[in-house]
Amino acid sequence: MNASYKYFSLSAAVLAVDLYTKQLVQAAFAYGDSLSINAYFDLVRYHNEGAAFSFLAQAGGWQKAFFTGVALLAIVVMSYLIQKHRTEKLFCLSLALVIGGAAGNVYDRLTLGYVVDFISLHYQDLYWPAFNVADSAICLGVGLLILDSFKRPSSAR
Image (cartoon, rainbow, N blue to C red; front, side):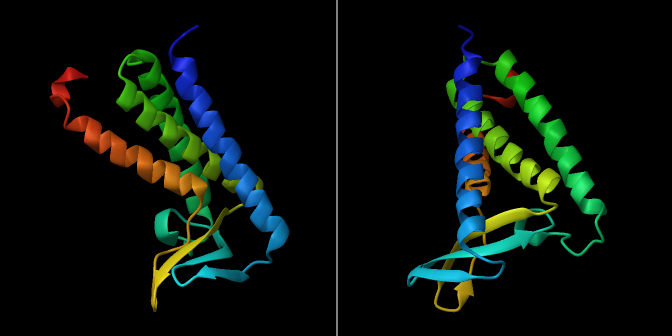
């Protein structure tokens, strides 16, 4: 079996968990609803029509196609990189997390026209923008990519 299948399986698992959790939130909450879990964490239902932190959310609609296209291109490139560097575990793990997260948000944009966000973290009146499992996987993957970049010179790839 090709070693890259385990990475693509991780991407598929991230996608499945992301879509499942978003479905649960959509079934349980109306848009704008919120449920306080503790002093720092709420479950909410928000719709993000832009990119990270709702960047360009009010841009008139062109941004949805743009972000979808960029994400699809990135998924293709990262898939190629996993195939090419399948023996580099941390690098491929990082890319697999980003692919799974990107796929989850692309699915939302294609089927709903927006991304469902439902995790709200805050301290007193300071709120982090709402996010989802896909966003978490992307952030973790990018963080691991940064860590991986310190392991060897950039000319190694």
